Amino acid sequence: MKKSVWKKVTGLGLVLMLGASVLAGCGAGKTSEGASQGGQAASGAAAGTVAKIKERGKFVVGVKYDLNLFGLKDPATGNVEGFDIDIAKAIAKKVLGDENKIELKEVTSKTRIPMLKNGEIDAIIATMTVTEERKKEVDFSDIYFMAGQSLLVKKDSPINGLKDLQKGMKVVTAKGSTSAKNIREKAPDVEVLEFENYAEAFTALKAGQGDALTTDNALLYGMAKQDPNYRVTEETFTEEPYGIAINKGDAEFVKTVNDLLKEMKDNGEYDKIYEKWIGEKPKK
Image (cartoon, rainbow, N blue to C red):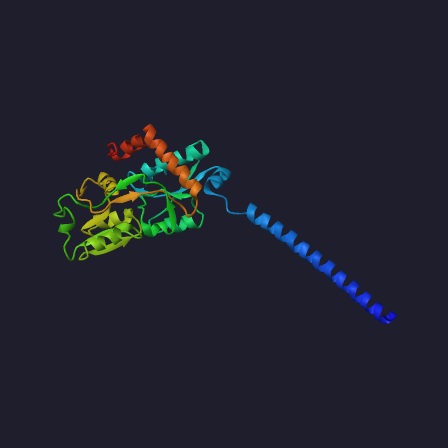
């Protein structure tokens, strides 16, 4: 082989070797960077709700402020009290060891799921009926209260159930509730008026804007307790199982809550809360 040709071959070989080294170096850099980024992604992954609660040092929960017996804000003291509030306190005690390490945020039937999904609250404990449609958006705990939809009417009203709802009558309820959907199906001839929350709906009923108010009987009993001029009809026409709503896929927090509910029912704490607010022991 001629000397000039040999030089060219040798030079080409050196170029290829250097190129390979550079590519290998770049490849190694990318692998290292990728591993580093992967590690950061893993460590930066969204923590579960239990971890967030512990890190924050308080349980932030969405509750109703307008439902006597379940979640009602006292305008004089600013305190919110009710069945749902006591369940929320029990969760705070289980996770943080102190029932007072809790922050209550007001939700309505319309706002509660969006507030959970955008991280404003850790859970919803707000007389929320478990439905297949809602299960597509959130996970639920085991049932913590079983209610049934009914009607609230004036004491002298001729309405005692669905059969008495005639065409031209108006029934009031809250926006975003299963109650609105149910009453339209069960009494298609009546006009349904939806308000922002049940406090507004009850005010509308008292102002003569409706012939009846519909929601779960447990909530209606609270309204009747506020104003003895109204009564709850005996008939219930749905089953309304209440569950605690938790972000989709957070199995750890669902288990934590379910374990607590079982403990409360086993040790009698649940029965005490039930009797305190509903006025009778739960049916077994």
